[in-house]
Amino acid sequence: VSAVIRRRTSDGTGNDGDGVAQGGIVLTASHNPGGPGEDFGIKYNEGLGQPAGEEFTEALYEKTLKLSEYKTLDNSEDIDLDAPAGTEYQLTPTTTVTIIDPYQNYLDALKSCFDFERLKEFGAREGFSMVFDGMHGAGGPFAKRVLSEELGLPPSSLLRCDPLSDFGGCHPDPNLTYASELVKRMGLLPDGGADPSLDDVSTVPALGAANDGDGDRNLIAGAGFFVTPSDSMA
Image (cartoon, rainbow, N blue to C red):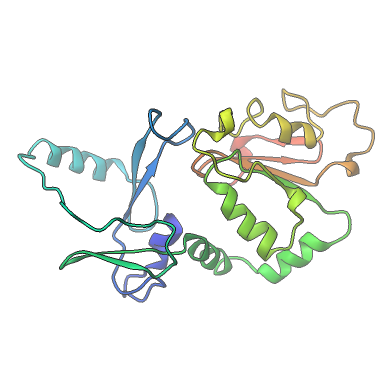
């Protein structure tokens, strides 16, 4: 969502048509099970894609104290979220819903920051391997697009990258407890220490990572060592 907001530039020349994104609404259960009968939440990101600050949320709260009515839209056309990117639904004379490709927006944002050709060369070098644990959350399809399709890493590099509404019964919090399979593959013990039974560190991936259910927190590990959150960069 942050990438989509940032790609809709201040002069209205963003990749998803005319207009400026002043912010974005995220519908998410965070790292809790979502879907009917489960958790649900709403987050708001501001104009640079950043989480809403206290000044914004306090102003929003003050507005809610003055609400006296709300309006609904009857008999509107059903919106197919699986429709091709670019599909538009005209709900009112001034309101249009456009289906976009969030993966392309995210990829464009990354390519504006990083040299993908160099990264692809790095990923293909002898002796390098990595594993990414999507924890059945929203980050999995993005990892497939970036790591596999763009950078050419093998499918074996991806773990639990199919999003599920209940996260497959697991708790998608990227830590040593809930990312236990990743931790084990990285040659680590459950407490994050190096596994003393590992004779050759070159037999485990050089890099390991995981993110939570809505992709805004992570875990990073190297071959035989755990990177503490204070030493990693989100």
